[in-house]
Amino acid sequence: MTVGDGLVGGSATIRYAIINQGVQEFHVTLPAQCKNVEFTGPNIRRKEQQGNTWTIGLQDKAWGAYTLVVTYDYQFDPHNATLPAAGVHALDVERETGSIAITSAASLQFPEKMAKEPLRRIDESELADNDRALITRPVLLAYRYEGPAYELAVDVTRFEELPVLQAVADHTQLTTVVTDAGEMLTQASFMVKNNAKQFQTFTLPSGADFWACYVGG
Image (cartoon, rainbow, N blue to C red):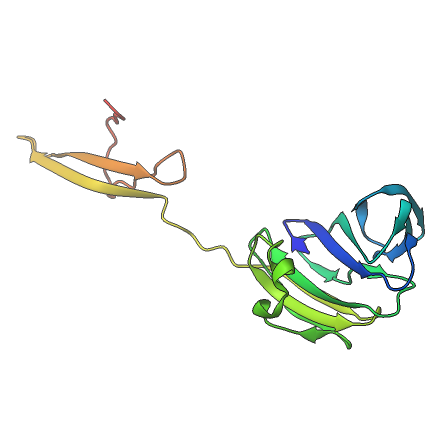
């Protein structure tokens, strides 16, 4: 599950081990908030939804093993949100084990609000290699579970944004002369590298009169 600025994108890989006989139909449940749900797998013939349950029908029976990939997304309020992080579950199976990885595509942090058995917190390195290879961003939270029922929710909070250096003056030259009338005239020249903002701001000494400015000649 990847959490962005107001949008969650999820991807689940379900690996079925099929014993003794072929299977032509799979049943999967998704959390109610999931939108834009897509299923990818070999020989898919039909996809039907009833509530939170999806039925995936194949053209022919699958034997031995079958891999089904589910993708989804949903929106949330990025300023104040508690995200339900429950995942995708396979119905009508004898045994289900799985893992959850939460990553971020924005400057967000995720304090754990609720994590109930059979969910167990693990280190990122404990994820299976074939699962870890599918993740392109740093994993902030990782869990492992057994069974179809668990509860997981995380709070979403923004990291405090700190000011960064906007520009650097590699070379500064100040030339001041005193006129016969006792006035001081100063010319300030700056060689500036601009990191971010388009405009530069300069503060004149108290009581100074601004005459002119030239940029790049």
